[in-house]
Length: 154
Image (tube, rainbow, N blue to C red; front, side, top):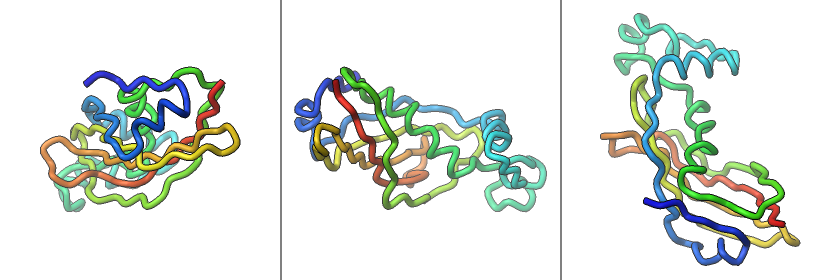
């Protein structure tokens, strides 16, 4: 699926209520999980201790941090949409975020995005995205929620 290309608030308006697209799958390997643990100082064994996780974790292997999966949103969003003609973009908020399913080590995930709302805040575009992080071969998403970005168009 080709990227959606948007260069203004008016162009965003054309997509209100519509699905904007789906990213490629990204594999979540143990190296990525370990790096996130180091970056966030969250070294809980369910994420890092492969032997203990296999025996005691309940999932048969380690799982990704929930916030690791959330942190992938900007990278995956850029695969779906190209927002041009902006001075800057601000992460404004997350609403109704719910973790539905753990992402196991070596699972592949992708982002599905729908534009659920748009507002003009005195020249700044407030963009509300309904997102789901899908897990390959799993009917339940890893998470679902509303992510809000502010776009300052030139």
